[in-house]
Each structure stands twice: as structure tokens, then as C-alpha cells.
Amino acid sequence: MPNERRIKVNETLVIQSFHSKPWPKHIEQCITSVQSWANQNKYAYRLFGDEVLEILPPDYLKNCFGRWPVIMDLARLLLIKNHLNKCAHRVIWLDADTFVFAPDKFNVTINEPHLVGREIWVSKKLSKQWKTRKHVHNAFVCFTNASPVLDFLIYATDRIVTNLTAASSPQLVGPKLYTHLNNLIRFPIMETAGMMSPAVMKDLIAGHGPALNRHLKALKEPMAAVNLSRSLIGHTVDDVLVTHDLFDQTIDKLIKSFKTSGFGNPS
Picture: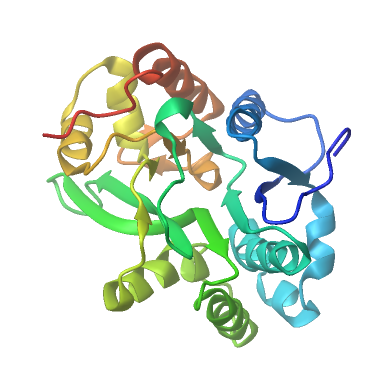
């Protein structure tokens, strides 16, 4: 990355990864929002490209079957580990499709050795009724050298994928793994680092709707950063076709309506 400054000892480092330009509009906005937020908080920042593939074990990469979410699930952990070993006191990862729309509300001040993001997913699935799933995700993660789980996550992620015999769910060693672990050990959660389902995005753009209402009701704190789930582009989820335009309109709405307050007003 051009003009990147040297990381100071005991500094917080924010890292992301995405392939070389040209980028879609929503990725440009997302990465710029994270860079700006990092600068605002005087954090160091690094953006990696396809060179992250070089740090992955060959057997792991082969068993990803070209699924980028799975590829990045281990790559992010190895990048974090490498930079903690160098000099950073704390390393924060945000997926490239994460948009920080309320930077003043996005404060990573929780004194914990590790943090994960909050997933609230509103969907009908096979039923006719809206359902809300409340899990965790790894589109946002934060680790210090004091974390007892980083090495285990590296081991578990590598072990699970290396032993696959066929392509798996793209979320297998991401939200699925983290949520299963969270059910047992209760990770500290960054509630303001959230996620939206396509149905919630559609309602948000319209200004009202049942999926939006369910999401707002499930919030513990107002959301300040949202993961857009870029891997869903081209898919139809709950009768919503996921497109670049859906993401662009969602970002515009969040900037116009929630930049100061954050998304949501939980009681």
C-alpha cells in the first residue's frame, strides 16, 4: 500500500484485504470508510491484495475449492498472528465489504484479548414467517497477544478445511465455527460491528418493513459498521435479488440517516 507508515511498538493495527483495482463502488466506499475510521483513531492501517494467498498452506488452499470466504478465514488469522508477532499490540480485521457509517460510535474500547462481530440475520428461509437468528461473525475480529484462542482458531480452521473431501458451506470456518464456539465459551462481542440480511436492506431502503422491524428489535446496541455479505451477489434471498445496486443504496441510506446516531434505537 503506498505511503503506509511504519507500525509503532504497542500500536493498534487495522488490516483488510481485497484484490487489485478496479473495485466496485461499494467496495471503494467500504474500504475508504475503514481507512478513514482508522486514521480518525490514529491506528496504523494495512491493505493486502492477492499476496495473502502465499501465506496459506497448499493443502488448505486446495481444499477451499476456490471459495474466497474460506480462503480468507485462515488468511486473516495468519495475518493477525504475523503482525502481533512483529510489534503490534492489537490487530483488528474488517472484511473489505464492511462499511463504517457511524465512525464516532464505532469504538473498540472493550478491554478484552479478543472480540468478534455480532450477526443478526432476519430471513424467512423455508417458512412463511420472518425469523431472527442471533449469532456471531468474523467479518470483524480483534486480537491481542494475550488472546488464548487465536492459535486454536488457526489450528481448528486449518484442520477442518484440510480434512474436507468436497466443497463445504462458505461459512463453515467463519460464522458457523465461531458461533458454535461462542455457544460454548461466550466470546466477547463487538455489538456495533453488525451485519444485515438482504431483506433488511430492502426494508431499510424503503424506510419500513417487517424484516427491518425484527432486526431493530434484536439489537443490543446501535450498529455503527455493517458487513454487506458480498458473497451473496447474484443470489436471490427471501425474494430479494442481491446486486451491487442494493449495496450502493444501503450505504447511501446509512450515511443519510444513521451517520450520527448509529443504526437502531434499542430500548
